[in-house]
Length: 510
Ligand code: C2O
Ligand code: CU
Image (cartoon, rainbow, N blue to C red; front, top):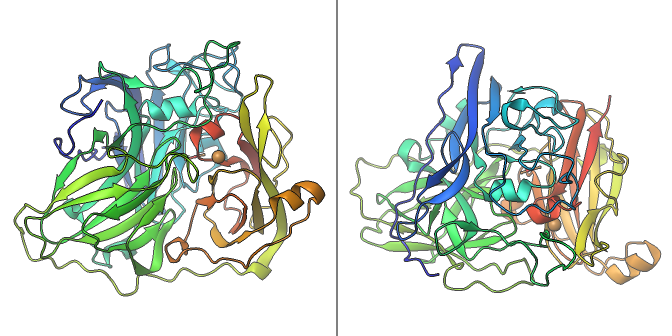
């Protein structure tokens, strides 16, 4: 099905209004419901799941260091929108089919409010997972001012819940940022990029079986999901009318599996100012931006002197990455900018020469080094699945960093996919990536490097919470664990991998 491109305007999710706000606290309530929404004007309205009747969910805007309470409320139907595979961890027949738990991705948050995958709850909190602790989550917003996002994280069905629409932006602001004089207000726009496939009737399609079906099972998880069309903020290939001036865009890849390598059709540079975890030291002029699932990049795009031009944002990343199918005419197009609005006032915003210091974590400060593999495996149905450190979700906890200690993790990829590895609670820095001999490693468990250490890309040299670990490479990350103790998770953010064992708990201990 080919839908005409650039016929719908880019929607901008509404900003969520608090139920109550005083000097010290802000309190929100967020309902999850099923509803119909138009995702393209040539399609019948699509049944989706969303927060507060909106897909993407409303944007939550908070001030750094201010405490926010949120009651996430499940008002979803009992039956899932998509086929559920009951053989994967946490989705067995002994639990209700529709479970939710909300994680604010990138948040510095106590563990009881982090959205632990087994802290799920059902409608009216009737049933809850074994790690459920509270109905009202508390966010201290102690991390960097940056583009975070919230999404569902229920064990074994995260891929289906997020695909149904359960995702939104969560922005942390700070006075420091206002002093930078970046484009703001209506010139600051969040861009959530996702891929989806539609049935003829306008409903969302998610496969019941992999390409090679599993005869013993009614429904089987698939190794990866890649959609046939691209949506931005919940519209297929939208357009945005802009003024001939600078804009700040907060880019987020909220797809299940698809990576995006983004460029502007005009060939012009974008000025990257922030990564997952906040501002980088200097803006960097880039011609393309790579975003794996869950990664964010903030860019300034300057449309000055481009009056009357249409500029297409394109994508050329194969899916799954890096060895999957090349993009086609649909998946290679993201959205369009039309420089058609008159300049409403002189553009006094700036691309600052210097943003703020991002101090490097010193390697010498690490008190522990962990070597952690990314592995392939086969289940009893002959399905391939992925593991971290060769361990399943339910194996005893092995990553137990001490509060306030610094660690270096070697993420050793023995598979042929690039995996975006995400840690909860903290922001890390990428030290380097380095090619190594996978065969030798499999034989003698020793690392034989086959090339020099490759420093992170200039645009990755800031705070990160998700790192791309490429095949035949070891990525090294460094981080300090805190300021909370407790139970968190680290996982691959390809949701089909995360849902099928490529996730592990970790515990920060005193
Ligand atoms: Cu964006 Cu553990 O997740
Ligand atoms: Cu993965």
